[in-house]
Image 1 (tube, rainbow, N blue to C red):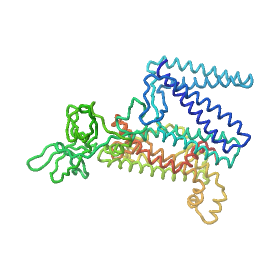
Image 2: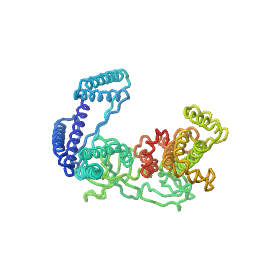
Image 3: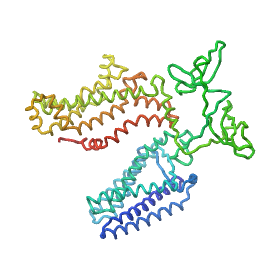
Image 4: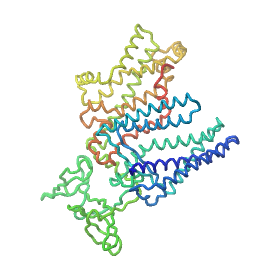
Length: 581
């Protein structure tokens, strides 16, 4: 059998076994708060789940996986992970095969002949889809399946904390639910535990993004799978006598540079080392403006005459070898020896490499001020787009819902018909208009259209306005309010949920807008974050740590918006099919 199939079987049995044991544990927890009538059923379910879990885990332990790596040092257990990278036809075949198995199982357990025949007919359809997908996959010479294998190491502390969080969270939610419904308590516990586990699984991509942003390059790929606990290489300040490092002023900022040449008149020529965007640039300055600073020398270990010594790298040779000055043991202290790169191991410890974030920003062009210009442009677009969309759409919607004027319904129908125009159709005319106005390479084309309304947003707000009782507006008119006063003071406060939803949609659309800047923006000083991130990916695609760090920085405002406005995100989902209110 292929090693990947063996690994898949062992992984599936492992997850199935732990799932059974987890379900048995949750059932045992629910016994504490279950009624007498529920206890026998819960006990039977707990015993069955525990038995299945133990058998599955035992089977996974007896499977010999070729080339499997040993557990990481200090870990009690490794939870295996596997994922397949394959084209659409492969995923179609996989999904249809799962549906085929489900329909066959349902047909075998059907309670009458009609249901059994319906299930088996569905199974036949899924079998045809599976076979077709298999032929499609085999007929495409570019189709290939890549297998990603990894593991999550657990030590005793993290394993105990994980189980405590799952059991404690499920128990707390079950007790809270018991106040409103006392039936099916065990089902509630299991449901809440599954929701917790599901949220953990769905959050893994973001966790991977965050963890990768703190990794060193050597941890990006590992024979033991994905590295979930980053390590950092230790360094020590070192005043290099052969190639000293200096801080010097350059174009209004302080840079780090090394000495290249010194002229007779006292002028010094230097090579910039940091920021990274200026690395390789030369400058000339006076000796009195230079300030010597220490380098960060890596701490490494190497073997000398059978002894393992620890020291720092004091010089990188042109041949690739490294000169090490030893600090320990005492027999080697103070000696300097040269080693090839394979003979040297860095001293590392568990930790986060925070330096990825300033390094990621230092690669940006100097005129962007470490990305602040990108952030400023994005905030300008977001604020003006949100303000323009809310004002224009609410005013137009109020007019269509409350004002009486000739042809109102016909004009509204024409407005809605514009939703059928694809964006690609209006792209070229808009570009020609903005070019005539001289707005190319400015932010105007990206936020000015927001002040001219959006058909769908107008429709949504109009439906909300129509749901507000006419008596409120009539009372305001009796009190002397004009149409604009009634709109601002009476009507807008009544549709706050719809305004909040449109605010969120517009914010996310303006923040993530990439096509607009790609068409209208040319210079770096006018680029927003979305465009800058795409360009950064092209420049630094070989350095995942820096790329993930920059991507994390661009996501932070959106994440903050989500956490503070979760209620309105949910309302946005429920309002997407709104027909009136």
